[in-house]
Image (cartoon, rainbow, N blue to C red):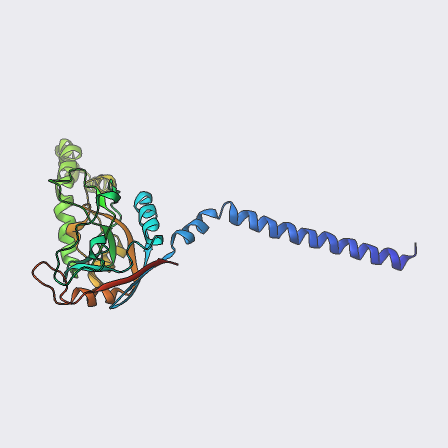
Length: 292
């Protein structure tokens, strides 16, 4: 075998090895996507868009990932077309818009509607991280007197409009909730050492300040770990002070999705004239709800 032929064969062999390595990298990347990155793929899948087409415009929403039973129920009902052709039958400006009830489909003008259905009841999935910001979508429910378990009626839904809060008001809410917990912690952990700390303040101010900072750091940790305290995140503050919400709904209903486009459609619907039963004088129709 001559030298040129050997060189050619070596080049071909090297090329095959390189191609094989490239194939392995490709498969490795694919394995990585289906393995360690699978969570992100599932997350993308779980962020499928809910397109709510109404007679007054289109809203787009996404499901929350941490309310699996409500998500599954509403996904199934949407795919069945359960909300197509129903109405936003209860509208309260600066509060919420409610629709989807089966008895609102083809309802006569002025008829009392919104009874929902007992076929689609679910135990609640309350989540502290789901605040009732503008655009939050929740399952309604019957009052506690007749529904002590706070079961959701997934035959319909409501979307929060609410009103805009000032930053100072949010501060006040935090203080009102947190101060009793703070005072109790201080009483338990600092008061027994107060005499010692008072003496230390005079004898060794530097050491006193060091210990006081430690107490305050420990208090801060305790407050953030306590289940009864309230701290708004930066995102929540921005949403509530710029777009609005209805904080009285927090912890009372299961929020399963959130409008991310078309918030102005909520305002448009909420502004329509209603009768004494809060039903719009002119029907606001839910033409279709689709998952895309």
